[in-house]
Amino acid sequence: MIFETIKLALQAIRRNALRSFLTLLGIVIGVGAVIAMVTIGNGTTAKVEQEMAKLGTNLLFVIPGQLGPRRTSAEAKPFTGQDVIALKEQLRNVEAVAPASSTSKTVIYGSESRTATIVGTDNDYFTTQARELSSGRQFLNSELRGGQAVCLIGETVREELFGSLDPIGAKIRVDKISCEVIGLLTVKGQSGFGQDQDDLVMMPIRTFQRRIAGNSDVGRIYVSASDKSYSAKVQSDIEWLLRERRKISANKDDDFAVADTQQIVATQTATTTMLTALLGAVAGVSLLVGGIGIMNIMLVSVTERTREIGIRLAIGATENQVLMQFLVEAVVLALVGGVAGVILGLGLAGGAAMTMKIPFVLDQQIVLLAFGFSALVGVVFGYFPARRAAHLNPIEALRHE
Image 1 (cartoon, helix red, strand yellow):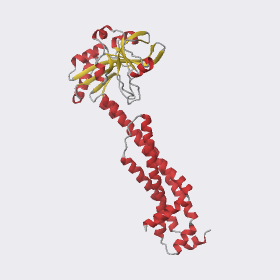
Image 2 (cartoon, rainbow, N blue to C red; image 1 turned 45 degrees about the vertical axis):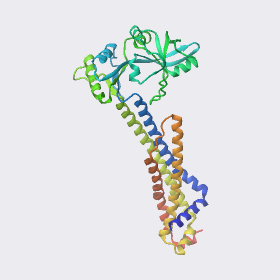
Image 3 (cartoon, rainbow, N blue to C red; image 1 turned 90 degrees about the horizontal axis):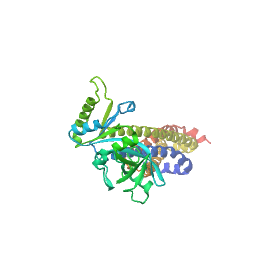
C-alpha cells in the first residue's frame, strides 16, 4: 500500500515538474546552506587549532596591558631588556625566553620594494616560534650584543625582492638602514589569523630598538616551557616576577597579561563555534521558508485535484488513504530537496575548503540533522493540505469544475 502511495506521489510530482522544482528550491537552499556553513565553520576552527599547535602546547605570550575588548596595551608600561634578562635567569622549567618588538616598514632591494613586518628579537625566537632556517645562519652573540645591521628574511620577502636569486650576503634597505641578509627562514604559510608568516624580516632586538624604533621598549615576550605540564607553574612564576619588577601592589590589577596557546585556542574555538551556530541558525530559517512553500503548493494541488479526490472518495477510498497520499507527496518533495541540499552543501563546503585552504571537516550529525529536519518540514507543512483533502465532501468534490 505504501509503495503504491509513493508511486502516485511521484507521478503527481512529475506532472508538474517545473512547479515541483521551484518548490524544492527552498528546501535545497536551506539544507545546503546549513551543511555548508557548519562544515566551513568547523574547518576554520580546525585550521586555528592546527596553526596554534605548530607553536606547541607549552608556549606563553606576555604582553603589556590586558587581553580582550578592554585591552590597554597602548597605555601600559612596556617591557624592558632587563625584564627579559630577569625572566631568563630566574624562571625554572623554561626552554627559551624571546623578546620581540615589531612594526611594518618598507624593504628595498635594487628596484624592488615591499612593505613587510620587521621583528626585533634574538635566537630564542626560533625555539618559541618553532622556526627554522632553510639556508644561512642565526645571529652571532656579537651581533646581538652590538646591535649589528644583519637580518633574516622570510620566503615571501625573498620571492618579492630577489626572485630566483640567492639572498644570502645581499644588502637590503630596511626603512633607512642597510642590512645584510645572513639567513632565509623556512616557509610557514598563513597563520590561523590570516597573516602571512613569511612576509617577515628578523633582526637583532638591539638593532631594531636603536635603528628602527628609536627606543629600548620590548613589545612582547615569548616563553616556552620545557613541557606543557609546567605551563601553569611557569605562568604563575612570570606573573609573580613581573608584578614584583613593575612594583604592582597587592590591591592592584596586573598591567600586563600572560596567556598560553591553550587559552588562545579555547578562545578562538569558542568564537568560531558561536559564529558557526549563528550562521547555521540563520541558514535554517530558509528551511522554514521552504516548508511554507511546500504547504502553499500542496494547497494549490488540493484545489486543482478536487474532482480527482472526489472520485477516489466516491469509489471507496478512505479519508486516511487520501490524507496519506497528499502527506506522502509533501514528504517526498521535502526528501528529494533534502538529498539535493546535502549534495549542494557538501559541494559548496568542499569548494570553500579548497579556496580558503582550510580542512574539510564533515560533521555527519549535522548532515543527518539537516536531512531529518527537511523530512520533518514535509510532514508538518504537508499535514494541513493533506487533512484538507481528506475531509472534502465527495459530492461537492465531484461537482467541482
